[in-house]
Image (tube, rainbow, N blue to C red; front, side, top):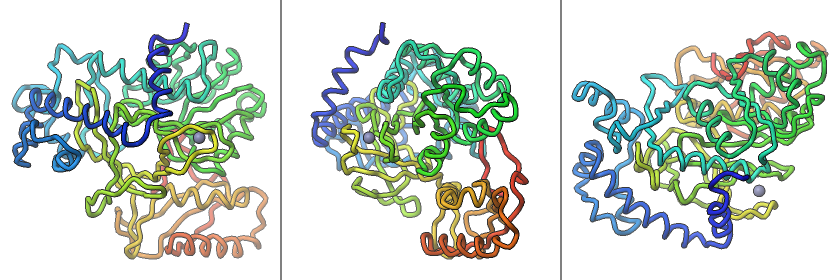
Length: 451
Ligand SMILES: [Zn+2]
């Protein structure tokens, strides 16, 4: 038996294939109107937001009206939580739209500084989340009968329990090991149960390649995994990385996005990486803005900007125009896999952004660029900052591990090549500092680029 959404879902996905952009926007606008009334009725935060903009829910009739709703960001999210704790003794009173007795799950954003921002989910929201996750699993070809190891950190952050729950609900056989299991247990389990798929961060997938030789004494491709489903970092969207990992595992690598947030997308089976197909347009309205000016950008082919979401049909915390700090690039030209609609590539986070003489640069973009030079370098690097970013006094110092077997005499030429390549592609000339292979610390399942 396929999961319980299969029938209606197939109908929706079929419909999506024949729908024009205009028709999708019509559905989105109808949902936005409902969502706006719901939020206003149930949340002090949204009553205040609308009043500050001189709006009432009934004013939102067209897209132009919708664009008058102010953006919100993580700082406002945290402030609303704190205010609620003071006033109500818990963090859900100001922002959340559902009463506490309807909230059945909390998730948090990970990684950044400050108190975690809380997402409150009702049963309705979990059903939607699982359904949107299922779309991705079906899209990449996972089916009941496949054995899946979840190697994302298992805490209630996005990739953990919510992913396990969605996989269970979809009907595959899931082993909820988590990144906490460490590489030995994970590799030995994969070998024992003949796992078909591994879900984890790209850097953990890369780390396991080395670990397999060390722990199991075999190349990782002998495990016979068929699917590697990576997310949480941008690495899986780098063509050189995808090729390297697919060869090492003898498996297909899919770049996947979305767990507690409504933007669900996944890359397809094309050999070449062409961004992730956006599969949740009916539950998520996506906008892109210039992170510095807040100006809205047209979603045309090749545009890069900070993502802004509006949650559609959600009950717990259905945010309107939330700036999440992720920077995306949009592709609209048709994909050779034949699936319609927009595709998305994650470029980085606005908080990771470095500004060198007016040029914005993301560590993930540096990673993409350096991968061209493997195996002459290992691909592991650190950006060395004398003081916290985003503004960096030039030159931008990058510690790079040279590859095994590279002669000392070849390093000067390699240094020049990398510096020239980076300065011609990014307009930033770095200062490369070579360090021996495997001398920089590996963090296992999470990569840190800045030192
Ligand atoms: Zn495709």
